[in-house]
Length: 212
Image (cartoon, rainbow, N blue to C red; front, side, top):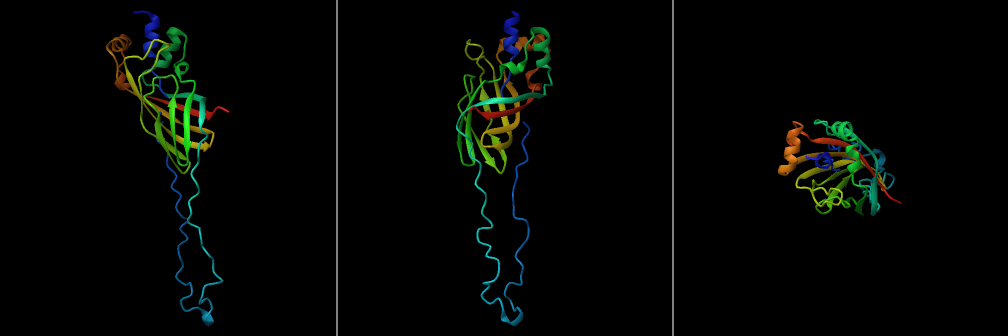
């Protein structure tokens, strides 16, 4: 088996993180006081005209709308690599698994949600992501990765991406990548290194930004 095939087969990278805590901005708990106009001094306050209007105090702030268009990775790091794939690639072949990250994403932003898709990467259609407060959570992305013009690889991985909306042009989160199935050839490559893909869920810190 050629070193090139092993390198390509091991380049299993997608782009998903531990779920971020969703902000749930309730009121500040300053409830309604019972004394508004119920038997007040001298009958004052009968019409409550001198009190706080309170109108609109419960209005939620508009959800963030991301800029639509091309987005690119601006900060990437390996948080967890239990099977040491990155070390194998660097030690044996002198390359990093981060080199296989998609170079661009297409984002379609709407108020409170967005769609995102890795370009030229084998992603199976765009996925939807919800924004709640300053947190976002995306659907699981299924990927049959494209290997350097050789077509799709015969294995599939899944990416769960979630985190924080920094602003309308920046997402900062974690991509949790799992490998539910591989083809026979890739399985043999894994066996060569004593690796079971079921035990190799990886976590990547991943910041994406709008490409102005």
